[in-house]
Picture (cartoon, one colour):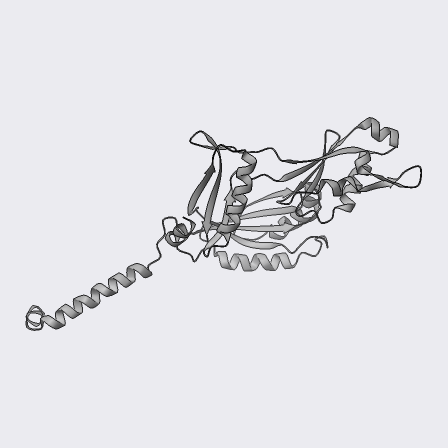
Amino acid sequence: MIRFSIDNPLITNLMLGVVALAGVLSWYAMPQEMFPLVQLDMVRVTTVFEGASPEEVEQQVTLPVEDAFDNMTDLDVMSSLSSEGQSTVTLKLKPGSNVDQFMRDARNKLDQITDLPEEAEEPELTRLETRFPVISLSLYGKVARGYLYRTADRVKRRLLALPGVASVGIAGDRDWELWVEVDPQVLAARRVSLQQLIAAVRDNLHDLPGGSIKAREGDILLRGKGVAPDPERVRQVAVRRNDEGGLLRLGELARVSLHLEEARTLGRFNGKPSVNLTVTKSADASTIVVADLVR
């Protein structure tokens, strides 16, 4: 081999060039990941049941789903969360279990449930996985925090349009709340109960996206997921007919105002108020490419 290399330098150099070129091409073709996607031996079942209370979700959705999985041999631990309008059941498998086969069996179990409410959507079955943020951003300055949130929302929409971006989270993101502040004396004078007000609002706001209605301390709280409820529309909700035969509207009985919900987290950067965004890539995207696009 050594004699061949000495006698044929041109061929030897050509072979070295081919090997070097193959190495360079392999380097660029190799997936570059600092935090690769990790699939867990856990499965989640999510069922949406809009408008239902946590108690209704538990009794009518969560318990039937749990019963369906009760005797699965590969199941190690089962936990559940019943919240307003949604049931979440998390299944942890025994070590060494075949997750794909388990998911097929679980889907068959779900298809055999016959007593779920008609209003509930079909249960969604997903395998849990860990996704690490590709890059984090901070928006800060000597401005009101509300302005930062509005700016962060615009930045989020632009980032989601980039190829390879799966999700963008805003730390401390807040939903809109609409407060209906009720005077008990006014209700008593008009012979209207708080339950009548709640029923009137619920019946007239079917299209509140992902929203919820709660009564707290005698008042009514409406919350919209990312969409601000319209105060004027709520004021015009008819509660019942008044003594003269006309309509008695909510605005005559209560004060309606729009607010952002109380922040659960507050960020600061270099001593200034900040809003932080985290960007997560899709499974087949390159961490380096997505980070460069975000920058």
